[in-house]
Image 1 (cartoon, rainbow, N blue to C red):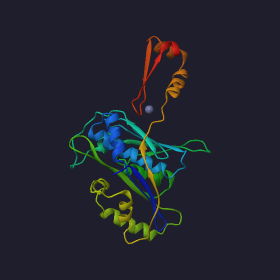
Image 2: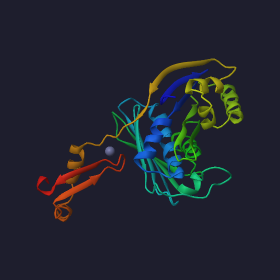
Image 3: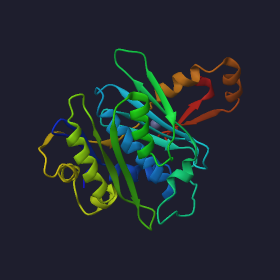
Image 4: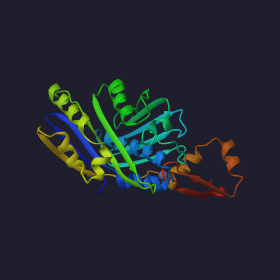
Length: 278
Ligand SMILES: [Zn+2]
């Protein structure tokens, strides 16, 4: 199944669903993730794409799950249909909890920090305490508490015994100002009875079919289908500018090596500079 985000509405309620299996597997390879780390990072990346889809195409959103667990910080950054991300400690494993990867234990207690980079305004920062570190519940709670947007977010990553990502994606429903409470209640009830989003995807349900299942018995409208992908925004020029902005003292120190190598956190790409260049 291709990586795609589908935007729809169900009788005035916003519903977006997406499949990210391929791009999450790419993240898995780039960062050499443990199953636990890619479950956390893949959920965060899928969540960032869903949130970016509610913004303008040239606006950007960064989600930081900053807890005291062994994974360290999990960061996902999305703009339009592109996402990138990293986890501080991608090698960390924890024992399976109730048959599932213990993402909440990996992230621990702390905060979710959200930054929206808007086109015609200063960046907007919001934060909220993590509910359980499982990402989807943290995003649902953040949207409600910090941005007063009643939502229900579901995210999942299924990792095979070979360590490869077998299915990844998610969906959210979001109340709009004119949403009918009875429609919302009906959708909430349907979601409770649905299998996990990874089970739906693994069974071959496309995001469009997932939306149709959630909206069964109601009027479902599909508005847009957008391919989504993994893409970093780093360039040699940007890395050079960043180095040039360092204090002279730091520059002199790193300039003692003939070749200076800088790795991008997000995509692991390595940039090499001669010290004379700096
Ligand atoms: Zn990069």
